[in-house]
Length: 216
Length: 216
DNA sequence: GGCCTCCCCCTACGAAAGTCGGGGGTGCAG
DNA sequence: CTGCACCCCCGACTTTCGTAGGGGGAGGCC
Image (cartoon, rainbow over all chains, first blue to last red; front, side, top):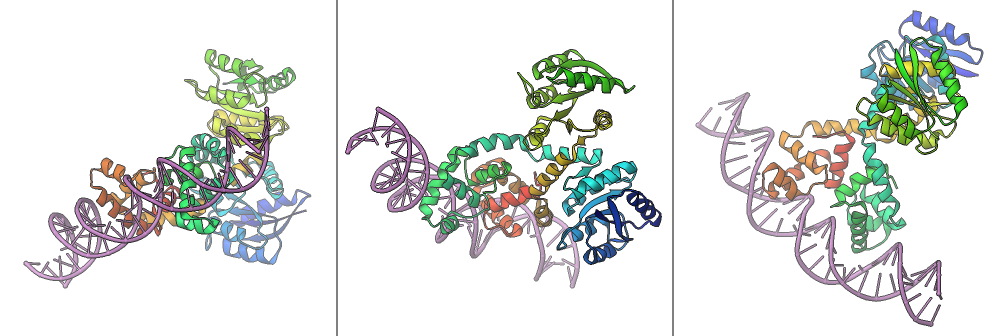
């Protein structure tokens, strides 16, 4: 049984959604709120699995509400709903921690499907939102990533440890302290790392490491 | 009219997909290929709007085929299809330039919908793929971005120029050359940048700048 | 054993980076 | 016009980086 909460300032929308959700045997609407603040209160009191949250609301909008909901001890999954303004809200919504992003013109059956999917750990994006996210993915420089990853492969374990700290902006002396070696040794490691990554200096090495998604 | 191409090494799957697509009045199957190499040939000869591409194929797999197709003069949109191995292929597929990523167990109606959506410039992701992409989005450090951006606001124009080059891994001497100033001046700028960004050294400054999406 | 290879650690020295203090220009409020 | 607040620029000094070169240990292979 999926415990759902509906958050929307429009009473009619709430009614419609509640009707829709309760038509599904596996979903139970356990709470409704007309603004974000109330939603957070309700979520702390009841156990909520999935929250359907409108973006535009008084007092606290859906973005802020999503962030607050996701910060709770047992955070509910969140699907944000909006009428039109896709461009503005997709990234904010995802950054806040939403697992779904739909437009209100989405077919009722799709909304039900989204609730189920999100409850089970998947995600559901409106096609236009998916488009934006993919564009962002390309922007973030993943062409370089693949090339950089290969170079990271043939680093020794010790060199990886050094690179991990280096790519967090630590100095050689700090790295030496953390890894229990002399600074001069760190320098030698860094020097080999630079050769391996074809970087001219530590700044480029740090950037390459990050591009490759290297965390340590 | 959407001109579609089907690429799959399994003749039965091709037959099924062709049947499905031709059931839609707005879609026309103009080409079929059993491997990536042949698909690229066909795409250069015919104008293709949307290609449905299987991932696992002999001679040239779907990933490579996608990259080649997207590199053509009038690249078709690409939807990649796979049976199971989601984890492996999502990122590779998107990096290659796919606009859609579906599993073969997807409902036929969903596949048709995907073709329409992708043809019109949107994207279609399998829920599990959407999940992965969203996770990646969070990984990429968008929480820190907001905080860093504020600090970038109160940099002077000249400092921004210096930071732009600095965050590409250039040395002070190189920056001085590009901006027509003495190295000592660059150092002074960098020093103020470090203070403004609350960074201890240039590596951290470069990373902060990148986190904030600062390009110059 | 002897040999080769790889990894880790180190010293020493020239080359960068970063700090400090200051000159000179502009614009604006008192 | 004087003082103040920026901004851009610079040279001298200290600290940190990066390279070159070498010692020593662990494991594979004859």
